[in-house]
Amino acid sequence: MVEIKSHEFEGFLERSARNYRLFVIYGPDRGLVSERATLIAGKTGVSLDDPFSLIKLDVSDLQRDQGRLLDEAGAIGLFGGDKLIWIRGAANEKYLVDSLQALSIDTPDATYVIVEAGDLKKGSLLRKATEAARNVVAIPCYADDTRALNSLIDSELSSAGIGITPAARQALLELIGGDRIASRNELRKLALYCRGKSTIEEHHVTEIIGDASAISVDDAVDAVLNGNSANFLHAMQKIISSKTAVFLVVQACLKQFQLLDAMKTEMDEKRLPAAQVMQALGRHLHFRRKPIIEQALRTWSAEALAREANRLQAAILQTRKRAVLEDSIVLQTLLSTTLQSARR
Picture 1 (cartoon, rainbow, N blue to C red):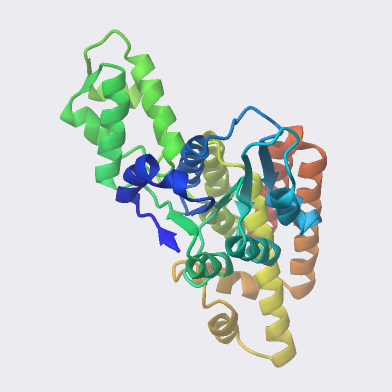
Picture 2 (cartoon, rainbow, N blue to C red):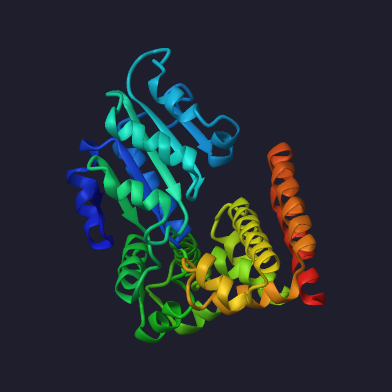
């Protein structure tokens, strides 16, 4: 595996990216994942507006046809030349991992593969497979720190020819940083708002910048499990504004309910307390999330968990059938689940 850390990415992009064909880009900052995937795609030399050269797939497309990645990679293009297979929404799907492992052993000369994934924990299936392969590039994407945010501010505002006061910069740093695309969009909005001015003042920031600070899919899922509709709506508003696919939220929520269902079954069959089941089946969870999961185990019955998982699965199917209504379907479904959690 070749792992590219944040401070190494720009140099890698300019000097070495063209030498590799398999990329797994992952992390909690979905906007940064998307941005870096786009930059890598630009370096492949594949025409991104040619439907014969660029094949964009959602991980749900692979779920329906688990051999599709290998089929697409091995297919000869109609007009020849290189092609790029770009997969979004990955997590730890075994069929995807198996296909990537096969491609890492025998990579077609004319094929590039970019996989966009969420926050892969250390030891997760996709991350382990990536680390074991020498010719797969792993690019983790974590939320921008202060240094990276200052660099982003300087880059966007200098290109617009506008300066910024220290007080305005500090106010700005408190409002951005959760998602790279959301942060960049807010900075461009600010530059447009202050067009014609030489310097951005603090009041300009407070007048026009929205809250694009740290938020993740896990925050939205936790709000659902806590039954906190205000936090859920706030999280979804920020996720949507960052251009993150809301499909990722309902997918993460489904996986959480499936895990809860497995845990609840273990509790009921072996008459174990929630804490003991958490130690066995919830070891991969972040310590801050464990109390939320434990509380959900106490309040949801096995039947209710199974029913809710089926409802979430049906909602995912509806988003695929009626893509134009995806945001509405996800919001309505997850808000209903949040209200059920609150009643429990």
